[in-house]
Length: 320
Ligand code: ASP
Image (tube, rainbow, N blue to C red):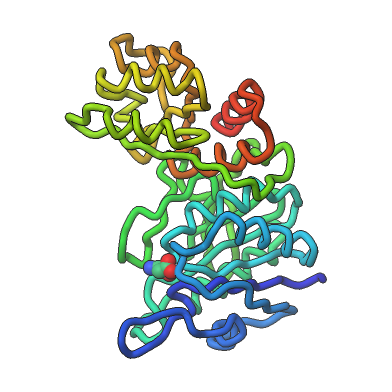
């Protein structure tokens, strides 16, 4: 189709109710509530869930639906709780030029100043604009345009809850037009489509005084592990033997829990430092945050068991 495909997944943008809101509006009802939304739209109800209940299988199916419809652009409406993760999965799976734009709402439709209609109008505008082509999956809320690989939900309630701490937004909307001011040099997509093979990837966050017992237990239960480390990639020294052992069996990715910046590779030399851990076989996540690194590792593990290939792909994504 030449127009924009709008796919509803639920979330606050579609939630009403007297005793606690829950998803109950159809995608068409959400579209109909937007003043000024015109143009050729194909509206599709795909899921009706809160963001936290979406699954990787849902996203693989959604990416396939978007591919099959071959619209000029696609908009996904969903719960904001997981947009930073779902948008990254769609970005990894989407090799086409047409934009996929994910949006949602921080204020539900029953509230004064509900932001869903403005966000949806902005998202459709971006999805239909040639300037957004070849940028992969974008996240549009509060008139800002973010790259899926960089965006974070950094506030629990604010209408401007989404930020891109590494590099800032790619652009913004002004007078109803998207303006891209910051184009990433390149983007990374998965080398082959993921499968639905059940794999488990653990995420373990370094915290002060943690003796590593839970890490050791977790690492025995998973096919891959992401460490959300302190600062540029540091963990308590008590974690070192556990991580060194795990890295002999499974891919272990070193990310930073700070929310911005890069994992170091060549600065600190103490036990539990980034140099120490990388020498023991951990894989640096670059600027990928732990949540995105976990999704990447999960999807890669469904396609290959080759440790060298997994390492190379994570390094490529981390450099993007
Ligand atoms: N607070 C969420 C939202 O903005 C709830 C969800 O993710 O479904 O939609």
